[in-house]
Amino acid sequence: MNEDCIFCKIVVGEVPSEFVYEDDACVAFNDISPQAPTHILIIPKKHFTSMDEAQEQHKETLGHLLLKAAEIAREKGFAEKGYRTVINTNRDGGQTVFHLHVHLLGGRQFIFPPG
Image (tube, rainbow, N blue to C red; front, top):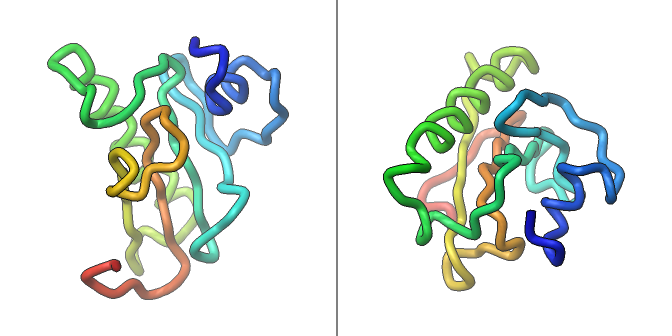
């Protein structure tokens, strides 16, 4: 745990959040500043800063986060219409919280390129 990380504090319950999913490896919760009708963040319980720091030892966690995003999209009922998963990396990539996380966005049509 990184003591200065808001997501680490959410994982251990120091900052309240209502989880839409939890298992031994990750938690998922609604984004406080949603960019779509459904905007869920899926984060590993174990802290690492960004994709830039990802290594071979993280491949199982990364795959798990993406599979859980798909599972949550199916459970929430928007998988068939479509959804977007995003991992922002570092400041220029749009990352604002430096604990790796997957954005799961759904409930509207998305354009490409995203911006």
